[in-house]
Amino acid sequence: MPGPQVDQLVEQIRKTLPRTQDLDAAVRDVCDGFEVFMPGFGASHSDEIAEARQIVELDFENVEILHKHSVFRKRPRWYFGPRPTHLHWPAFRDYLLKGKEWTEDAVKGIDKASNEIVSLLENPAEKHFSCRGLVVGHVQSGKTANMTAVIAKALDAGYDTVIVLAGLTNKLRYQTQLRLSNDLVLRNRERLFTCRGGWGGSEAES
Image (cartoon, rainbow, N blue to C red; front, side, top):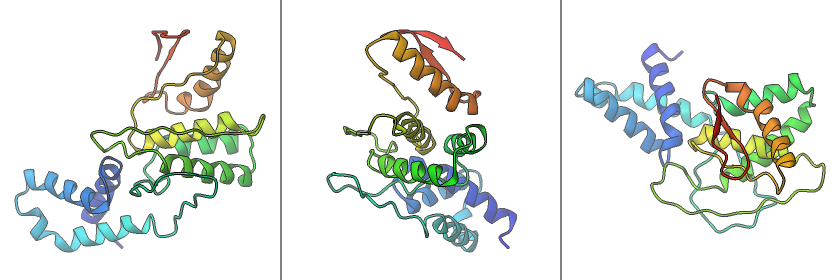
C-alpha cells in the first residue's frame, strides 16, 4: 500500500491537475511547490513521485469520452471525467439518485453526456482562450439537469464563474435559477453563491 508521503503527493497532484495542461505538468508543479520548503525534494523522493504519478494516471485508465453527438475541431485533450476529489458533480449526482430518486441508468446517461460537453470546452488553465458552442435538446429531455451537470463538472475542472441566460421573462429566469440553486448551489453552499435579479441583477444570495 502507498505510504503517507505518496498519499499526500497523490492528493496534491489531483488538486493541481485541473489547473495544468496535463499530468506531467501537474507533477512538476507539485514538486516545485515542495522544493520551495524542502530543496532537493524531487531527487530524494523520486520513487514516491513516480508511484504517485502512476496512481493518478490510473484515474484515467478506464475513462474514455466518446464524441458520438459532437461536431468539433481537433483540440488537445484536457478533461477526462470526474475525479475522486471533485465536489460539485458528486454532490449533484448523489442528489439525483437519493433526493430525486433518479435511476442509475438515467444518471449514467447524464454523466456521459456532460463529460462529452465539458471535454469540448477549453482548458481553464490556459491563460487566453475563446470557445463557443451550442448544445441542442428536445423538450422535456432533461436539458436543465444536463446543464446543471455541465456546470458542476466545469466548476470542478477549474472554471470559477458561470453566467446563465435563462429566458426572456423574469418568471422563466426565476424558475431556472430556483432549480439551479436547489440542485447545485445548496449542495455546496459554502463554496457557491448566486446573484439574482433580471438582466444585470446584483443582489447577492450567499
